[in-house]
Length: 132
Image (spheres, rainbow, N blue to C red):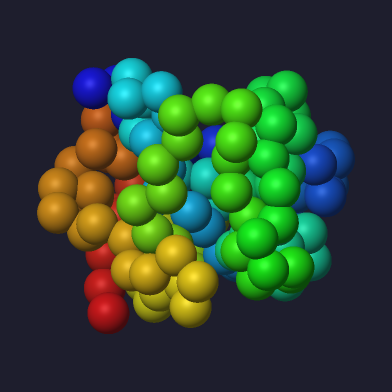
């Protein structure tokens, strides 16, 4: 299965992306073909459900809130939410930290996650810390 990281920071910061930022993330599998970490700054996503809603909107996938604003479900595609958490990145020292959990979607699967992220060219030199 392929793996990728999507960072919505560019949506918020445009050309002024700060090297240190943080937010919430979801770990999802889209159509059984690609596993994704979808990172969203706190300013864009107060709730984990908003990350899935934005992902679906940008991919032109139908979805709906089951209990707004707590729980969003993709209805127009086979998207499995593995879980979520919090992230913090410091590009000045090439460090990405993934931890915590989503109240609605549960804890992300940390098994092998650091290695998957580091296999991506953008993150190959990063220290990826996956913690509690």
